[in-house]
Image (cartoon, rainbow, N blue to C red; front, side):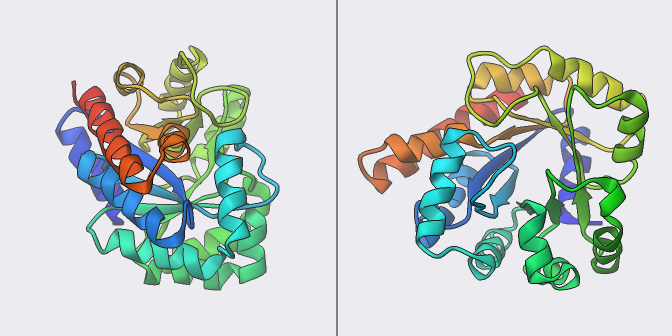
Length: 264
């Protein structure tokens, strides 16, 4: 059982949702990324998604795209992603990597899964990988005993939903709306409906991403989901701060507020 799976057992026993924070590796810089994630954890984030920065994202909005572009301009690649993963898991925090398929294929499917495991990572989220094309990846994940996390959306049909969720472990990533990542004033009502549909076909924990940025939104999602994923809100604070010191304070404060939301 991975640390991520153990976390969801713990949060279920505590009758609350897990708070999951996202940040691209290498943003704002390699060390500052680790510092920011550490601030998230100190503020109450339960688990971390480390983004593998990619030049042609499918579901990333402008905030994450800008962060990824900066990271890539500084030479962030697989080595930096796995180094960040090692640093975070050394804190005792469950962590996964979120990446599009091309970096995995270029690195080597078996080698990528092995590197995740060696860095103490719990698994990988693959937003653009279909289950029909995931045979080699599923085999590699099984061999390394890490979690394979696929993404489902409100448009996913019931039959398809059962097929995809059956291939997920750790948690199921439920995209709250048809669109890209970003902060929003409200969380789409389709998120609750999607989680309800998933519950009918799977007992695997469900985490909702896309759009959560405030304590009240986190509290709302925590009423029906097992995990609440927040990314763009943390990134925006770092982008808007006048200094890294200010950014770290604001990131920790947001983490504390969101943690209150999922625990309320």
